[in-house]
Image (cartoon, rainbow, N blue to C red; front, side, top):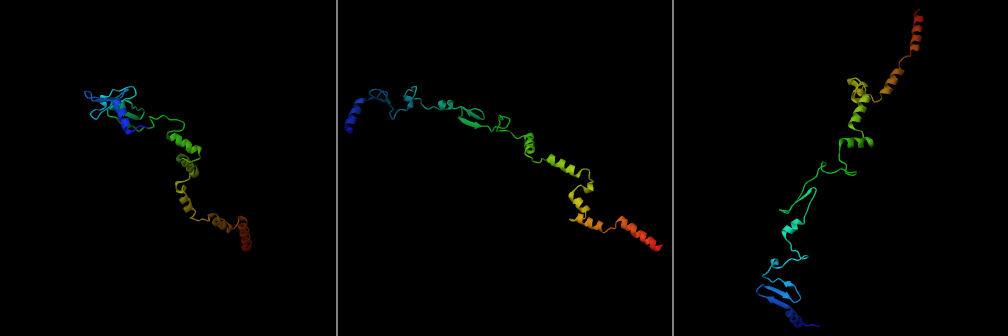
Length: 174
């Protein structure tokens, strides 16, 4: 087992320092940056590439609604609208024709359908009797109108009864 002193002695035999270039190196290769150096003092290799703004901006790309400005490094997004988005089988756009078809297919009444049905219901009724309120007023707002009319008719004499009474009166008066 090596002591700290032994490790330092072995390390000092491998370490050399060049004062003119201000570079320390280890035997067997490698370069050490001292406190007075920066990455500009080291050469790049094929796998030890340094970060640069130009390199980072060159590695970014965007397409479609996303845009990238490599000069400023800004990403921008433009909201797409239905004119610039392709329609598929699941992302169908709203159209009046599609809504009308859906409503008809699923038995929903459209305004046009309801208007037609109401017009058919009132047909050619006079303007004074083409609403429910006007019809109710014409029947004196009588909720039992049919019973009222039936009872009224029941109190009237039949034609045969009237003829019999007239005949009897005529005989009696002689």
